[in-house]
Image 1 (cartoon, helix red, strand yellow):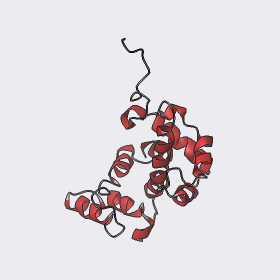
Image 2 (tube, helix red, strand yellow; image 1 turned 90 degrees about the vertical axis):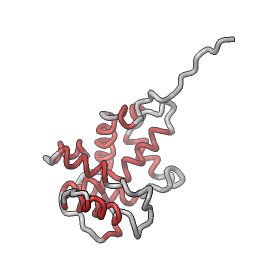
Image 3 (cartoon, one colour; image 1 turned 60 degrees about the vertical axis):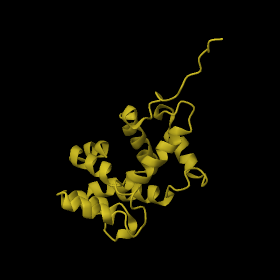
Length: 167
């Protein structure tokens, strides 16, 4: 989200917070009846801005909240894709974003068994609504995620290397 904010002239902190907060309630309230509605209530009680809360509400198609601002469109466009890119990295030998390419992500999108909970239509429609080609969107998101790979745990540092064991 911060990378898209920079690219599209948005506030990187604001967009970054929307990205970080948009699913904070999902683990506790995963149903369509509760997510992101419960989270929106919690954020309102805690004084979060209407702008952040609206973006979060608009990231789920079923809320009925339209995506009008660039931040809202970017959040929707990046949401499912970030999860799919993460899954793509985790199946690589080094479990690293450095091993992930847009072409391979695009190919994996055709495999319905891979990361089956990720909505491919949301990825495709999100890129279109943002006004970018799908392949370019995927590549942009991969590069943005590579910049924070260590923070995401996707820099390969968690992979244990084979070493000679003492005999």
